Length: 117
Image (cartoon, rainbow, N blue to C red; front, side, top):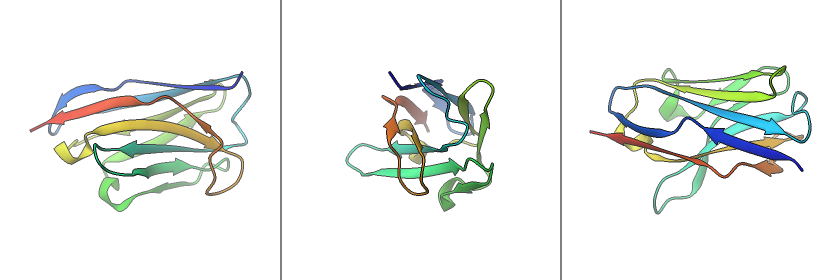
């Protein structure tokens, strides 16, 4: 059974930092593209950052310079380092993995991040 399990969410003050982790099990994701998405209340789920199987990364404009996505293939784990957090970063963050660019076949259950002002 393939699973993606996120952890590391919580409550933080504006300007603070959090690191989210996404641990994969059931198969190796070393050849998969991995992404972090977020969904704020009343809004759609949007891609925040992605890391390709090759190691290249992409970020949505609102988090560039503040968030860093990385992966440890040996641990089958993906991370999202979030710095200088803002109240508008408040959302449920989801990890996802996909074999082909732009498509994600596997999803975690999400971890909640709340940034207080």
